[in-house]
Length: 329
Image (cartoon, rainbow, N blue to C red):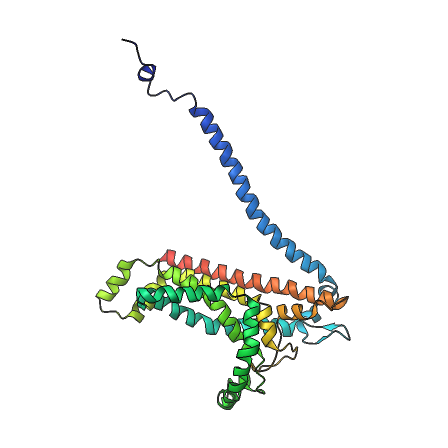
């Protein structure tokens, strides 16, 4: 009977083509490692390139004016006197207003979609949230200018008559009923960042194990107690990351706030008065800017990089601190 070479082969001896295949796999892994590392380095290089280009473009103001540019609120292209305090102040104030309004609303919507809403309602509401995220910013700006600004002009007298008389926060709501101002821009920004924050919260709320929530409900907890003591602690790190994602979106928004902000460099504590932000200042004046004026606008762009990077750094440190605390537990 003829012998079968496949049967007589020693089972411990690997086939002849295994070793070349291992070498090819190792070579492909090296290529893939270099490819993905190059992609990551391209992101870092693009970010550093943008920051260095804005630093170089604004060198005449940043290095020539020094601290005066960072501490002055005067902005006068006629006399070539520029200060970044008003744009930076407007950027931070409008972003904080947007967060204060958008985060509670996003939390409520995400909680409703994951814990309360019936299945037939979750689809339409989720689709509406996604549609809000897909609307271009200039559409938000036009809606704010033609619809929301007249509405704010009608309710601002009531705000001044009520909240404006309070001893502590009264100065924040003191001003003429123009409709244009920091408060209007903050509300429009809150509508813009709400879909992003809500989407993150909804996705992470769905990752909470059902057995944890069912155990809490079995012990007699209400929906609010389950959300506050089970869902939110379990997803706290991701929720904070989503909030800072929305903040980063608000800090760099341009067209929406340009329509409703009023473009004023007067520094005031009132939220009802017109103001400006870094991005809106660049959008309004860059086409006509020359010489030192253009350098000042590019320097504002560099400051926006610095402000955004600082916010993201604070977010990473906060998330790392929370992760360390959870690890200690």
